[in-house]
Image 1 (tube, helix red, strand yellow):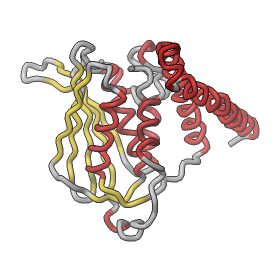
Image 2: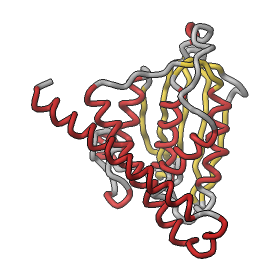
Image 3: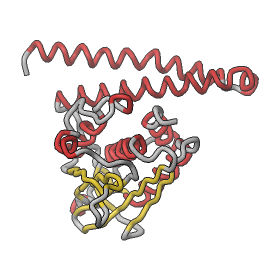
Image 4: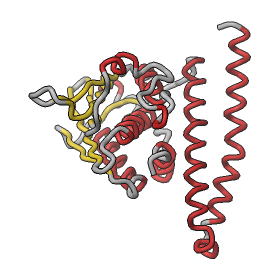
Length: 262
């Protein structure tokens, strides 16, 4: 990489880091405003501030992701965990974050338990991103999102299906490119590019297609990710801890990811 590009990357790295500092102060101020004595006085105002702060954090996180992807600086944190339990917990947390939206999320799985060795934090973020994308393009009056888990022994497959209008054929070919988006009002065209790159880091892949009836009528879109289970490394990584600190950390991530939907 050229010295000029290195300087640009360093500049953006410092910029995103510096942007996080005032955001921390803002979140602390919101918490004070949400105190019992201030609840009646600042109810609507804190809701607006919180949503705006989460949206800003989402953009900062996306910027950090792109910077790390360009620098090839993403190191997966491989741990052993139950992926089915992790998805169930994610859906439980998402229901709190999305309780004000008209969204139904269903989860179907062909197994009750599946231990894999991979980066739980990265997989969690990938699934959240795909669900967020599915909600944006679903039927606004009756959003139905279906998550399907398949255990294929050495690999796992996770599909996220929506009930929206589907994806145009030309977009199917380029939707994972950075800044390509079907609707500029619903996104920046960054999320799916990050999904593809994060999957590449953990040796996974993603495919998208339209869901069609027998009459060739489009009934939504489906995104399917394929991730290695790394069964040979499960015992080796069984004592290593996930990047998640606690459930509050997961809830905070969900609130940030879905900030433009609530």
